[in-house]
Amino acid sequence: MTDKTILKALRGEVQPTPPIWMMRQAGRYLPEYRATRAKAGDFLSLCYNPELAAEVTLQPIRRYGFDGAILFADILLLPQALGADLWFVTGEGPRLSTVTSQADFDALKPSSDVHEVLSPIYDTIRILKQELPKETTLIGFAGAPWTVATYMVAGRGTPDQGPAHALKDENRAVFSALIDLLTEGTIEYLSRQIEAGAEVVKLFDSWAGSLKGQDFGDFALKPAQKIITAMKARHPGVPVIAFPREAGNRYVGFAKATGADCVAIDNSVSAQWAADHVQVDGCVQGNLASRHMVTGGQALVDETRAIVQALGKRPHIFNLGHGITPDADPDNVQRMIDAVRG
Ligand code: CP3
Image (tube, rainbow, N blue to C red; front, top):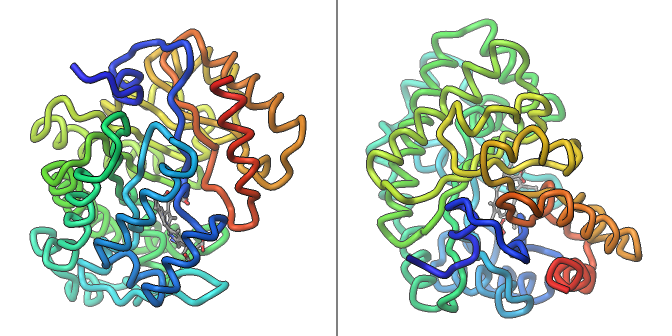
């Protein structure tokens, strides 16, 4: 059995100090990331360059000694591997060719074809297996079908995921076919990540909170359950972290319903509430508001300690409630780590 602290937490062990990593820990707030991205040319070239993608994955490990390293890639590489056009507009975000009709859907590739485009990502993982410190856990990931579909339908990020909601309500057949294709593609993608060396996988459902009523069950819970069931059959013993962001009350029971080993929570719920209602079923990851990485000060230290305290009686992985932002101060990250470990 491994001594890696993240794997211990995911097995259900309570540790005196929770393991810690941070969403978007390899990113623009770090000068060394910006330098490597410039060397690669642009963000997507960085994702598909195994040497440089491994380098930016390692940068926050060298600087801070996080317990976990998350593979450097993006949730939108899977749509690209399925045949969508994908590009990033500086200062604005992703753009994709849209899927809004049966003809658009029919033009996509089958899920078994994704590896041709994604093979450099598996190479990044193989490099990381060689280069990571022996105590660091390597985390693979994918977007959850609903969140990825919101970008594929709209062709970009949207404030309310309106286009995906409209397709879901107006052309259920095409929308469901897209969710099923993404579910199958995600199983393929995560399986290869594990075969290459990922020790944990995380499913990011960043827009789960916009699904209401039965839609949450159908398009957040059910796809996660299908993916996790398939992963457990193919790779027993590899833990899965689910992040149905802004799920609120629907975080309760999510682990049991999907088979996830850990539920990651955002900072719209309190750590004490999560301890009482979510952590009773197992490991919880979270949930410091990422704005503290910008604002710092005593509030950062106090809030970090309060989270560690509230979630300390059961298995916990310390993290932010969402990704760190480009305007964060790298020194505040160190202050957070000191507050967790000190
Ligand atoms: O360090 C890590 O967390 C690993 C790498 C990672 C990235 N994106 C790198 C990235 C991970 C796990 C993601 C997940 C991701 N990507 C999500 C889910 C999590 C979340 O944040 O809600 C989503 C929705 C995306 C899609 C995406 N990628 C958007 C909307 C954007 C543009 C917005 C932005 O922050 O600029 C990206 C770009 C992106 N992905 C960057 C990074 C480091 C910034 C690109 C750059 O360097 O210019």
